[in-house]
Length: 119
Image (cartoon, rainbow, N blue to C red; front, side, top):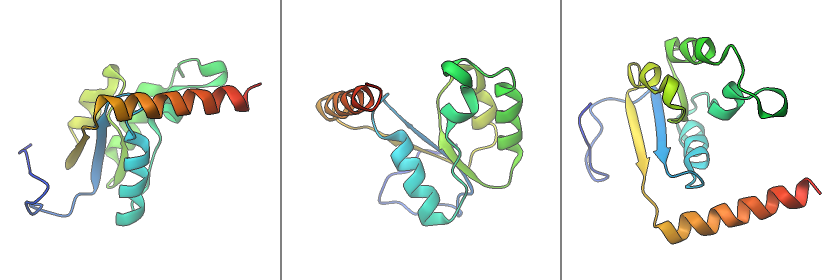
């Protein structure tokens, strides 16, 4: 896959898109925005991976394979065990490279929000 700059044209309209970045770095938010803008289905990778009590779902690998076989999707590029399945089929990977201070601030805010909702 060639590396593109933000100012360069896309060689084609992407239909299978991965969003990558630091944990807490807005990968999911970016993926949702891309999906909305292109009117493509967004699939949250955490929802495929985790079942009850945040345990790994036995069907995770197969579910990602099913997702990757679809003609269009947007998701996050995470979980080492399935990255090769996704990258074998993606048209575009968007790398979100936010400053560490921004990511840490977002992680703090998310952690505090989760603690408030669970107490």
